[in-house]
Amino acid sequence: MTAPAAPSTADDPGSPPANAAGRSRADARGLSFGESGGWCGIGAGAQVRVLTARSVRAFVADRRLLVVSLIEPLVMLTAFGQVLSGLAHAPGFPAGVRYLDFLLPALLLTTALQSGVQAGTGLVDDLRGGLLTRLRTMPVQPVAVLVARSLDGLVRGTLRLVILLTLARCVFGHRPTGGAVGLAAAVALCLAVGWSLGWVFIALACWIDRAEPLHAAAGLVMFPLMFASDAFVPVAGLPEWLRWIARANPVTYGIDAARDLSLTGTAGPGVLAAVITGLAVATLMIPLAVRGLARPR
Amino acid sequence: MNAIEAVGLGRRFGAVAALDGVDLAVPAGSVLGLLGHNGAGKSTLVHVLATLLRPTSGTARVAGHDVVRQAARVRRSIGVTGQQATLDLTMSGRDNLLLVARLLGAGRRQARARADHLLDLFGLAAAADRPARTYSGGMRRRLDLAATLVRRPEVLFLDEPGTGLDPVSRLDLWDMVRQLTGTGTTVVLTTQHLEEADRLADAIVVLAGGRIIASGSPADLKARVGRRTATVQLSTDPDADAAETALRRADLRPVRDGRTLTTALTRDSDLTAVVRALDAAAVEPDRLTVAEPGLDEVYLALTARTEAR
Image (tube, rainbow over all chains, first blue to last red; front, side):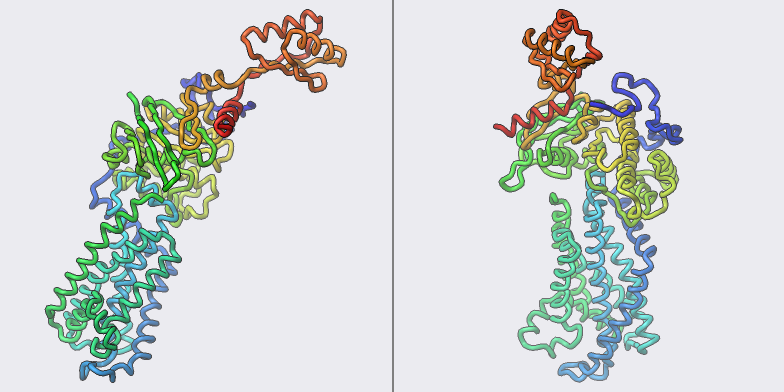
């Protein structure tokens, strides 16, 4: 066995580690650990903070993503607000309400829900890229990784909602009858419900862990959630069989409550129902997601 | 004290036993080399010990903690560098190191200083602020190692660490492994580079089909399986003829290739016998060399034996 000149052999460990190729890195050779002695992990809250900051920074640094986030609400407003405006004449439509004002709470919730899909996609990227494998060998709790992704989704969602509302107001003349306070409350509710229901997509990502099938599955879940609800027409305007699904759909609760808030400015019992169904879904999905993340791959 | 102890460790994937009753005892501060073909169970063993996979049978303790019941404790003491880079490639090399340092408990300033040191040490300072996806394969490997060495792991797992590294970086890595064991870190490395195992490992475990088929120090294994050979180089054909006859008469079964004769030294006295036979035939060899068995031979002999079974 011919060996290249080795830096030092096993029988003389005391000799200074010579640099193999005589490169100038010789002085940097010394592996030292400095003050890292006590570093053996941080609390779960701090883990969430560090990981969330990292994801948010990545989002801010990604110009293309920011531009898409700006354009998407414009397209949504145009597509749904203009094309579907004839639906204002559908049976059961509340009298005296502009279609845009009726639609906007639904768009708010859809957009907030989309953040869950984004969180799932980011998670799949981390899984594929291998970062999660490293985190799983470190003193980092899987649930902290997931919560950080969901919070990052919340930050992105908030930004997108602000953009959506600004465009609706400036370009399409959106003036909800519930006033600014009602609208702010509707936004907060949509973010809360969107965050909770977003765990469905995070759980999907943990089990599917590939971007393409994840998007297909997310679409499969998203479509019935949106269309089998009162997002675009009141439940009364739906065919009989769809009404049953719409009444069981947690999205319907969220939209109902957001609509109440933005149109009347008062919180009905719907708000509580929306928050409770949302939290119920999250409570169900979080352990499922953690299990999916921890499973061997 | 043993840094790693495993008893009857097994891992099944459906009907396949990737790991089948592995016992290990690795003393603290030593280097264990895991050898074996692809699919022999090396990576599975590393994954189980590093808490990435739950064993389906048996138990293992790493740094004094059970890998299943005290996985969180184990994770506080280990470092793992796998075959694939485990990084966020969209972030810069520096940001990757900062993230790891912060998650381990470094303050902002401390993390920054630590990242600087490691980037320097691994020759990545010039590329520190570029996204890691623009790095070459070797640079990614080095960044990955740097991330693993943000703090001193009590037990370090290196899954085929030499793969993708240029020869200089590989020597640097060996160097670093020795420095680490000098500070008390226990290292487990899987490798297909026998030279790597030979140079670094205090003990070697050869895996095949999820089982340990041989273990011992590199020297033990070589002595057990390999054979020393003597090679005699002659300057003329008549000399070569005479030497061949002499060796054959002495029952040394030489193999001739031109003016070179090779003979296996099966008994301790065989080397002296070679010299005596040459002396008796009055031939003066140009060169007489004795080769120790390589780990290659050991490995091939051992794995061939299990395949024949």
